[in-house]
Structures are given as C-alpha cells and as structure tokens.
Amino acid sequence: MFRISDILKKHKKGPDGQPPKKRPEEIIIMPDKGQGVSPEQKKKPEDVIIMDKSATAPAAPVTGSIKLSVEKAFTATAKALISKAINQEMSKEADAQANFLYDEVLAAVKHFYTSDLKKEAGFLASINSLTEKSMPILAEHGHIIQWRCLLDYPGSEDYLYRHSVNVYFLSLAVGMEFGLDKDRLIDLGTGAFLHDIGLAGIDERMKAAKLEKDEHDNIKKHPDFGVDIMVRSTKDINEKVLKIIKQAHERADGSGYPEGLVADDINILAQIVGLVDVYEALTHRRPYRPRYTPLEALDIILKNKKLFGPKVIKSLINSVGVYPVGTPVLLSSKETGVVTVNHPDLLFRPVVSIVSDPYGDELTEPKDIDLTSHPILYIEDCVKEKA
Image 1 (tube, rainbow, N blue to C red):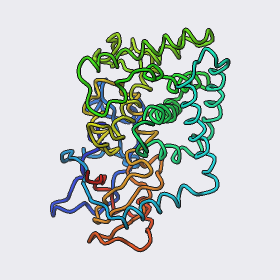
Image 2 (cartoon, one colour):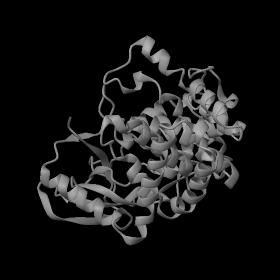
Image 3 (tube, rainbow, N blue to C red):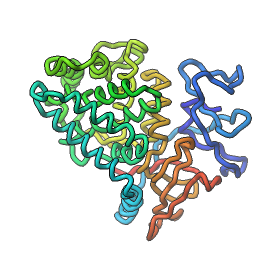
Image 4 (cartoon, rainbow, N blue to C red):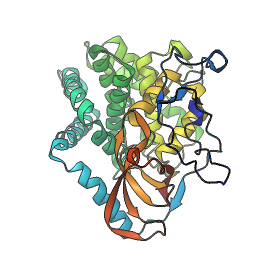
C-alpha cells in the first residue's frame, strides 16, 4: 500500500543497495471506498491510497526521500534528439486532428480575451461547441494535447492566452477522469476557457518580476472582474460557469481568494480548474523562477494537499500521469530519454525514447524502451535543463 504522498519517492532498494530483481510495482488509484484494504490500513479521509495492481497482499511503502529533479546541461545534439523523438510520435497522421484543435482553441482564446464580448453575439455557443468537439479528440489523442499543454510558452506576451488554453484542455481531461457527464463537462470547459478573462485588462500581469503586495492585491480582484465582464456581456451564462470564474482561486483551507471559501463551499468544477491552474503554472516558466518538472509540480501539490480535495488530486494524476509525454527522464540504467507514450493503468511504466547512454554520450538515433517490457528498469528521476 502507498499513500499518495509516497508516489514520488524512490523505489525500495535491496540489501546490496541495488533495486530488487523483481517487477516494479504497477499501481492504480484505489476506489474511494477503500475496497481491498485491511482495517489497520484504512485511509484517513484526507489521504488517497495507491495500491499494487497485481499484488494479492498490500505492497510495502516505498522508502526514501523526495529530492529535486536531476539537472542536466543538454547539448545541442541531445536537444535535437529529444525533439526528434517527440516529433516522430506527434507527426502521426491520426494525431494531426489534436494539434489542429489546440491551435483552434488558442485562436479562439486570443480573440475572445481581446474582444468586446457585448458585441460578440453567441460567443458562449462558440465555446460550448469547441468543448463538444474537444471531448472525443481528448479521449482519443489526449497525450498529444497534453504534450502541447506542457510545452513552455514561446514568449511572455503570449502567456495568458496559452495558460488559458492549457487550463481548458487539462481541466477537461481531469473532468473526464472524474466522471462528469456531458453537460457538466461543457460547463467545465466554458468556465476553464474564461477563468482568467478578468486578467486581460490588468497591467500587472505583464510585469517581468515578482509582484509587490499592492500589485498582487490588484491581481486578486480579477475573479470579480471576470464575473462582471460576463454578466455585462450576456444574459445566457449560467451560474455554474460564473462560479468557476469566481471561485477557481479559492482553496479548501480558506486561504484562497476573493472570498476565502472553504472545502465543499467551493464548486467542484471550480476546484478542478483551480488545481489545474496551479499545476499548469508550476510546469511553466515565470519571470521570477524557472519551470518545475511535472514530478516537482506533483510534489508541491501533494505537500500542500490541504488546499485541494483528494478526489480532484487523484483525477489529475490519473489524467496527466506522473511523467507526461515530453518529460525528460533518467532511467535506473543511467540512460537519459524522453517519455513518448504513457500507459494509463501503469503510471510509472511509460515508453521512453533514449537519447543518451549511461556514460552521457548521445545516440545517433533515439532508441525506444517500453518499461512494461523491461521489469528491471525504472525511471529514477525527471531531468530538468540547467538555467
């Protein structure tokens, strides 16, 4: 048995200090009812339990401490190999639809965030239509869209639009994993699309440095600004979408804004968007800090799990994975590669395209390793490029 806070810890080593010669744990998230857990192992309400998929008895907790991801100065050759490995996966004809959809939603966000919405008759119907179109493509090609969502922004002037697009897609993915029906998914998509529209007219969002207190206080008004924009622009917007815009920055412990709501007082759709908003922000560069790896982002979220509901955290992990497509990783063999395919039921066993050997020498061609077929190998850490 593992608690959710253990998922980022190192694999348990044997007496000789080496990984045990057995198939590493293949884990799934347990149902909330705690089925298959003995009385002494029953979870606390705030914990999420992860269990070995194939074990007949609960597995031992993973031991070790969480540390920052490995830093590596990628050479130009290694960067080219990483790009090649990713592009080979993304260039499949079946995935072109997903790339086109991402660009279509980005164009729509740029348009609606910079327009006078009172003059945009039917803009809500347009967003709803995009969401209906997005759901089947996400179900079929979600790894492509998630890869686009986790790429760094091409420029700071574009960050609000790309952030909103990324939160839109990742929120829908989490909502689908959460089991929301079609109508609630459409509300979720519309709210995620518009959740930061109140920032569009705030100058502080463009500041290339950490905000001062008064500037941050002004930023914290943007949920109210967003609701005001919607109410003035259309009579068709429903209460659920307005709650997402208003409450996406609230936190379960009452530390959020603008009203300091707690726990179940926060609409569940807003909770999803709020968690995704944090995950997306952590995995992208800001003027005052570098981007975190997906592993580091999950570490931060889990260390602050009192801010979010456990069911929402669980759905985020199941939908985006521990190592999303495009994540550079270090294997236990000391080879470096990039994740190109994830197996939904085996979060720690993706396909990795190897770009450098155990000695750090770049390969002439990427070499794919499916960790489900290599039981001794495992991902030791994420790799982040040195600043």
